[in-house]
Image (tube, rainbow, N blue to C red):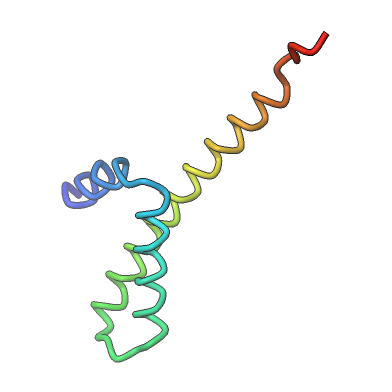
Length: 76
């Protein structure tokens, strides 16, 4: 359990591009095959964590865009 908590806190510091690039590498390794079941499961779990990081970044970006679009314009 502590390992998951440590990974989650470390993932919070990842930028979107870092998480995306690592996720791409995880998917590449899974698609290539040749890993043990245990390695595959660990890669899949890591991929899920990275996908959550990316999703949080994208949701934050969407919220910022929505707020900017909803803000009253200074063009009067």
